[in-house]
Image 1 (tube, rainbow, N blue to C red):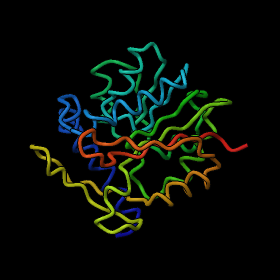
Image 2 (cartoon, one colour):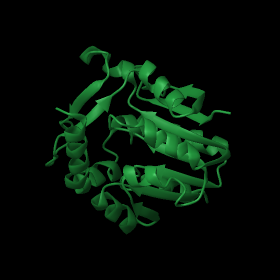
Image 3 (cartoon, rainbow, N blue to C red):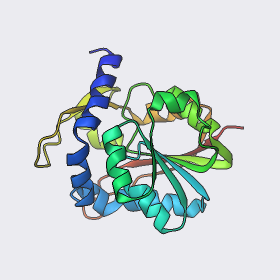
Length: 223
């Protein structure tokens, strides 16, 4: 299926799944998030002591609320109007904005000390978006990307390409979601292509099994 068709299905899934996904997150039903990945992104942000943070693909808004509780100015944007509605209802600053709109005007909200894409880069076309986000970083600012660890899914074939999430682990009516898998090499190449320099790599692991739960990349604008 062409990328444009898959991208359309991806966007539609987040509209249809907004309410069910919000329940899953707020009821802490995702083990990897409880064990390591939520804490990992928060710790990586706290270490930088950012004054302003932009959460791209903010979903139902948990990260912005966690940052606000630490007195960090956080703004969340998401292309799903239904998810933004859920986020606003729980409190915080959120804007309904597609990635294409953000890409066209990356500084519409000013510049930020940190920009986060936390499990939010699911489309095949991400290079231009990352290049635009780099323009919205203040000097010394960083882009933080957390995603599924590529090696944890290597058994399904270690190559770039579309895959499908059916949310089988959760009860409720979910619409299947296509998402684009990238190898470790492809993630690094994506950053370089966007004019970013990789500063650090983190690999949060399951505390019992030691298996990688996510890949956390921190990048800054290349000089």
